[in-house]
Image 1 (cartoon, rainbow, N blue to C red):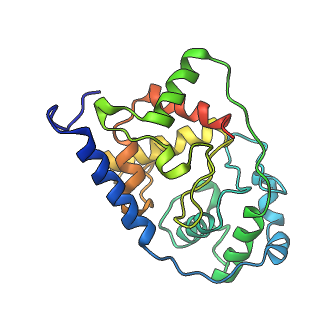
Image 2: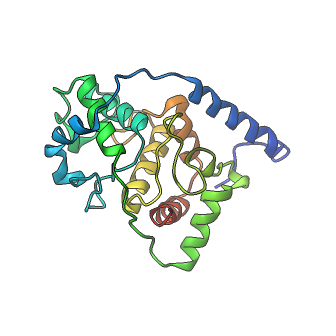
Length: 223
């Protein structure tokens, strides 16, 4: 995949512009009611079938929510409830949830410890996945994932960036492709459009299928 940026464009300029966009996202405040983890536990009974009782989904089709980040979880649940993020499996699940219900559920799941999925031991895939996660791809202006999600995959809770280390590879790859679709064809039903300042769409837009699968596999074993 060829970069859309001129070859004489300094990488530092691209990096500074990208970091500046992240700073703007981090400064954007998202007010929400304080969550009660104990109350949230009682409200997650219906969620356990897909996401596990403690937020560690046993199925790669559904995301692990344990330790994902309270602010991030609140945004995603609100977006799903309000129609800003389409998730077929979640249709109607949050329709009657108040902001307080969502805050309580987020507090409970964030208080749980995430379990490691584990990466497939494919040397070539692991090497490429590590390269993308830690250094990005300078030729196509794909930034390193560490800038938002930390070297250990712990995310950045105050900024609302999720802790992705140990997440199911299939789920991570699906979301990256949805963001990429959103960047190129926002009218596509498979597009994901609810990332602040289009940060993830900007990243995924330049990623190949090979890079997406490799970095998703690497993330699943990251801790």
